[in-house]
Structure formats: C-alpha cells, structure tokens
Amino acid sequence: MSFFKKLKDRFVAKEEPKDMQDDLQPLDDIGTQDIDPQSESQTKTFDHKPVDVFEQPKQQTKSQPKKQSNGWEFDFEDDDLISIEEFEEWESQQLGAKFREGLEKSRENFQNKLNDLLAMYRTVDEDFFEALEEMLIQADVGFNTVMELVESLRMEAKRQNITETADLREVIVEKIVEIYEQEDDELQKMNIQEGELTVILMVGVNGVGKTTTIGKLAHRYKAQGKQVMLAAGDTFRAGAIEQLQVWGDRVGVEVIKQKEGSDPAAVMYDAVNAAKNRGADILICDTAGRLQNKANLMTELEKVKKVLSKAVPGAPHEVLLALDATTGQNALVQAKAFKEVTDVSGIVLTKLDGTAKGGIVLAIRNELHIPVKFVGLGEKLDDLQPFDAESYVYGLFADMIEQSTEEENKAAEVLKDARDE
Image (cartoon, rainbow, N blue to C red):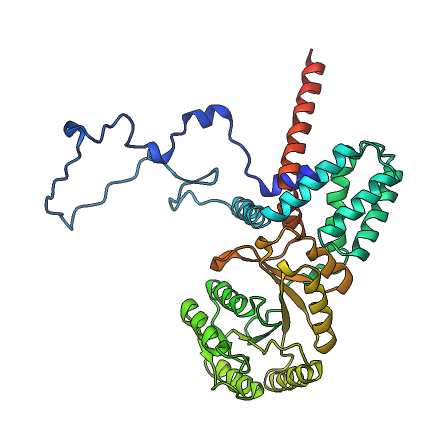
C-alpha cells in the first residue's frame, strides 16, 4: 500500500456505493419538498390534545431513518451499537478533518509551491533540489532541517532510481513524517499520573496564547472526567490573574490565586495544597511571561519548581512551552531561550491555523528535540488537539494526497479492465 493511500484510508471516510447514495434523501429536504409557503391548504396545524402520561411509547421500527453524520450512519438502539473499530475509524476522520481545516493556509502555501516546483522541474536533478531547499526554507522548516531532508531525498531518489519529479511527491511527504517520528514515540504522550495529582507547568512569553491554552487544556481534561484546578502564578502582568479567572469560570474549574504582585511560589504552594485537599486529578500552573531578564526568569522558575516537587514527588510532571506559530523562526528563538532556563518537556504550538508557514513544527522537533504535544487549530474550545505527525502531514497535503490516490485507483481500474478483456 502506498503512503498516500495509507493516509487517505486513515483520515477520509470511505465513499458509499452510488446506488446507496441515490437512495439517501438530504435531511434538509425531508418534509419540505413541493411545499409552497404561501399556500393555505398546505399550512400545518397542530392539535393540542391532552397527553396520557400512562400511554406506552410506540416501538421504533426498522424503517425509521438513522442519524447521519459526515458520511457515517449510526443507529443508536441498544442492540445495534457501533464497534470499537468503527468508532476509532470515525475518530480518525474527525481528527483528519480538524487538521485539514486548521492547516488550510499552510496547505495552500505548501501544495501550491510544491506543485509549481514539480511543474517547472520535470527531471530530478541538482537544480530541482536547490529550488526545493529554497521553498522549504521559506516555509520556516528551518535551515538545518531542510538540509537533512533534501540530502535524504537525494539518497532515496538514487536508491529507487527516481528520475521524474512527479514520482518524488510521495517520498517528500513520507520523509517529512520520518523527520518527526525519528525519536521515541513515548515522548509524544502527556505524562499523566493516573490515580494521583498531575502537575502541569505552563511557560511562555506574553502574547503567545498561554492563558488561552491553559483554559483549553482544562476543558479537554475536564471533558475526560478529570477534576482540574488552575493556579494563577503570573502575578507580574497586569490583568493576568483576572484573565485566567475568566477562563476558569468559562470552563467551570477552580482557580487558586492571590493578589497581583504576590510571590508566584507562594501561589503554587497554596494551589498544590488546595488540589490535594480537594482530590484534584490535574493542576495546571500559569507562570510569568517575562523573557527580558533570563537570570530573574530562571530564579523564579526554579523556585516554583522546587515548591511543586517538594509538595508532589516528581512534579512538575510536564513543563509545556506555549509558542505562537505565526511568529515563525522567532518561535524557534523563544524555544531555545526557554530550553536554557528550564526543562521543557513539550511544546504547545498556538495559532497554527493563522499561519501559512506550518513548517515551524518540523524545525522545533528536529533542531531542539522537543516534541510538539498540542497544536491550536482554531478558536473553539476543542480546537486544541494532540499533535500527530501523520495528521499534520495530511493537513498539509490533503488535496495532493486525495488527487494522487484517485489517479492511482483509476490507473488500477484501467489495468484491470485491460486484463479482463
């Protein structure tokens, strides 16, 4: 199975046979066909007769329509539940749709430029590779990462004896996934302590969406049935405590706070004790976003971490750095600076839907060896998604992947027809 086909099978709903599609009636059309709103004879009336509370409910018949969603058909009767495999397949398609929508700007940038490149250079030669290097650097993939990627493509083209650039499309996408997945997959997972308090420390400069990310993370874990609390440790920035409280109220989680200008370590001490007393599962701690003075920042973070680790062994279990994807290479600079002052265990890349340079994901992973654990794909509460390399690549190249597999399927059908004849 080709790599493109593997991605399409994972993220795209399988089409129903055409004869089944013809039998389906759009839900919006049910009960509205051939109705003239001006016709009095077709105006609906309702009889307000008393309801017998002892009346037995009518049994559902198999002829009743089933609820439909995104090409899937579900019948929610007790004896007709979908299997785990079907649910996981549906879940993958929802994830693919989110990445496809969230990476629209980056996809247009990547695909258009790559397609232009393939049209301009039909033969795999040094001129093509130099043009590919320039394109990837402009997409903020990062100089070192681009050099490694293109060198790997040179070797693969020689190994497979690829001479036409069109045949290199799939290899390019596959190599991008390999760059991200070259290290331990376990690093990708959040270090959640089941049955114990998990402490997550959020760091990042002001304006990158740190507080919003905390709110969305809280919503995510609360939706999973966990008791979540927040600690307002950014006591330096005016309005930071109030902003976090707004998110706490919106999500429905408690915020532990003190007055502006308080010692952040004291806030953390109170927050950990409160979380332990209330039996919380997850405590997410906000911190100040100052980067002007690394020495002060290091001292503050070290003090906070010392308080947390003394109260909860192993805490903080995650140190997440929020970065604004729209800042491109500047996000890489920030990541390097924070890596110097604290042990960052993962990146949350915000506003990925607002940039055409989504290649920054690869630069962060390959050059800093820090996994991107979450990405922001929109403004809604559930638009903060766990990062997945294949989902990311599908979001970047969805149109190309689907077009390529369609061409592949047509070619296979032509070959089959020729053999049958």
